Length: 132
Image (cartoon, rainbow, N blue to C red; front, side):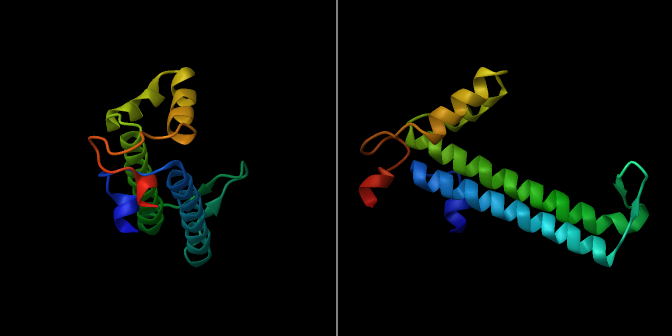
């Protein structure tokens, strides 16, 4: 599982990509739950506008949980997307297509989420569907 989610080497099919996206969503819900639980232990202030604030040293656990969760989730998404591009016989650098305004995110979603990978072996490894 660690290799599947945190290594950019190899190939994965669409089903594993969507499973990883579901795992990512559940993971961020857990991180949010941890932050809510942390609020119960180390409460901060709520302004009249509804903004939550924590000052000083008491903010450190919030930063660790929040940023740690974000970066772990970011790395996982990056690795899974690179593997998906590898399945399409493209370099992982294609992930940057998302930076193109309007067209990029749509292109990314179609290319990675809906189009079938290369049949048979390619330069990134064996066909993940052939192993199944």
